[in-house]
View (cartoon, helix red, strand yellow):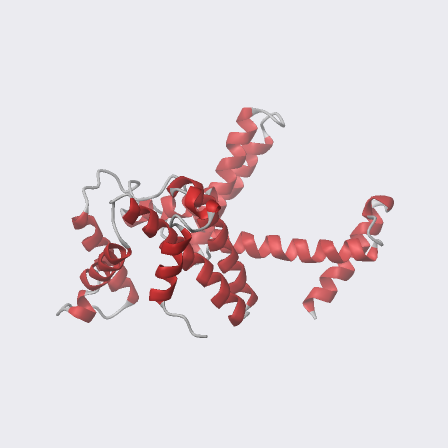
Length: 252
């Protein structure tokens, strides 16, 4: 059976009704936030896997969260799903004057510049940092903070001095007492400098780390298999040999 968006709205309405689901009826905006994040991350995993069926499934879970929030808002008289759709449609038309208007924008850079220009006229912004959500994961937020600072001229012209800054921060970290608050602060500076370097190189730091996490996990699972499920019974040298075998296997 093929369902439509209207069917999804009807299902959500029933789940929240008197004869609906006890769990669904108990939810509110705040209680749903962890699920919104979780479903978003699961969709990212699906995209990186290249599995189209899984992508469709996980994107449906993300859509469910949007509909869920909109249903709660409707019940509380705040807004409706129609308001959500209207807002985003109006925004897309407004911020694409080269498509829906008479602006002549030739390159992606021109488009992004115009996008920011229009966005700045829509809301009162006292700082370039105002539009960076505090709830963002730290790595993504670091990249967005540095990107917005760069847009107003606070940036190097090329990656070389950024790399030098990374080396400088590593030196400052090594000079601190291990485990101290000062060491933690300096380590944070290293991470921020690395994120800035990623931006200069056209790399999304969050995606890069996610890929590294997945790679480490896959290889370590192979190490565990080679160790018969008991890696703790082997020496570090033996485990490193397993690791090298796992690396070679993952490259094939």
